[in-house]
Image 1 (cartoon, rainbow, N blue to C red):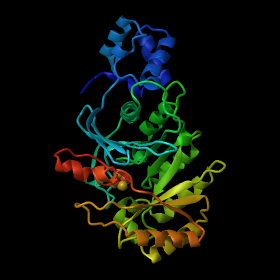
Image 2: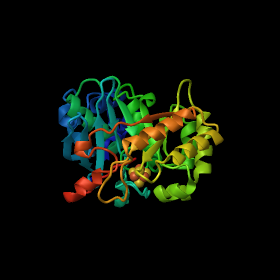
Image 3: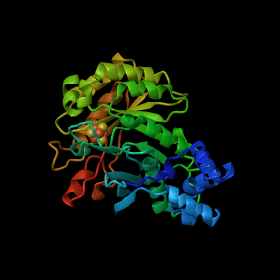
Image 4: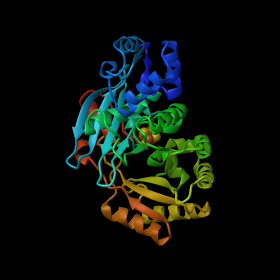
Length: 363
Ligand code: SF4
């Protein structure tokens, strides 16, 4: 693998240090940062406002690009799904989801995932690697360039969700550094308020996340309000059970800004966790912890051959939602997007293993 620096993962201050090592002034570092992140240029040769000699020295020292797109699928509904690979060949998956008011990019934080959620195909890959800071940022740059062309401003309203392959809180430092880079006004300028990070329930990191000064929004994947079932569906529950998770959520609630809420995600599995009793149990759980600034995202599961789960019927999803609402809980159904290209969670590995290349698909 390349010994060069992946320049896309350097914060502005780190770029200033690199520039100094190359005997270059500070303003060059800002120029390079803007070229890589604001203009989204993908090769030093393209940064034509830098002296040619400097471009050559940079190319000897650093890479801008470390990810390669191996496949791209475009859905009838405009959703785009990208399979990429790292320089060491590990799969990375990113999804672009357009909508009238805003576009959302769902990125991965790890290649594969060490957690063993029973309903998720990514889990079958195990952990292949933590993505580096640069590999996290580069996913977004690649997608924006593909959709909007190289250069130009990041379209207003682009949202990010850390819900692709992997558990973001198990790659916490790289994740936070990547978000800081992406928030920079000289770069992509995607501020934390437009970012949501989803965790399967890494409790100590929820506490840490709550204390971040300028933090993104939080989603917690719940999928059952009963320990016995959650142990099976999301074995991370054996490490931090519902009591520990909900206590952390309660503390997190205390850190919410004005008007902000956080989310519990609930993957709906037909005949497994979608009964009226399950919905009532969930409402009781929220009530027990007096969680009021929370909403529930109901996510109908995407059945896949290699998994023993089926989708909930639309009727059971609606029933579940109305029971929650009747108990004063805000509940939403996440509309499936990109089904024809298997862009929805948990289906990606199935499609690509069939072609001989593994890929992920998170919560
Ligand atoms: S659902 Fe998310 S946390 Fe669980 S195994 Fe899949 S990628 Fe990992």
